Length: 277
Image (cartoon, rainbow, N blue to C red):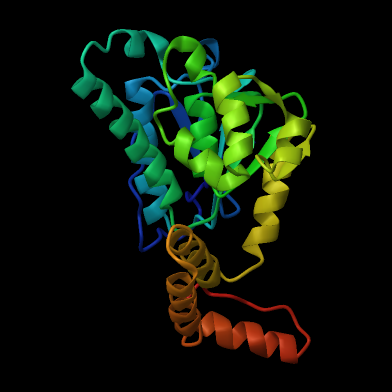
């Protein structure tokens, strides 16, 4: 797959990003794409507390890495992420501790959702419970044809707690969200596509995610970040207020190098050379 850049024969960059050592995930950057791969296939990449902590850390790295234009999350083995760590949940004995557990997971998902670069979940296999909630925190979802998605928490005497009851209905509508949440069923990839739960289905989710990332990266990084911000900030406010947000952010694009370059390139019938500024 991707690999770390070899700077041994290059000038040392002015910006040297310190990447922490990760135990439960792999972080690589290649050709502008950050690849975050969950590496606990025997545990079906379950979101234990230590894994959640590393995800929070890796989002900070992505946000600060100037080489990253798009971030892709995927898993090793037969699961993308098969949920939270059930043994950790079983040990929760107190309503306040339970609430803190949910808030901690939500905070990690919020870190993903707040990333300034576009994010893609390359759903290579099972995306259940917290795994689907992680995918829902991404901007786009690409599923392997064999993938299964679902929020099975009610079958464990739980409800989704890492954002599933809120992000799912916002994505697919309340009626469809109730179907998935109240049955807890596993949804095959093709049905997930029909529901609007995923954007694309392919034999190879990682290859499809790379293709999608490359299509996104042809565009202005500044415009991509502002478009993300417009959608995110406008999603939960009344339409007149949301339109004000859009107008404000549109106004910001007008002063950028990328807007001058993009419009000039269009008029001159050539490919633009965006700088992200």
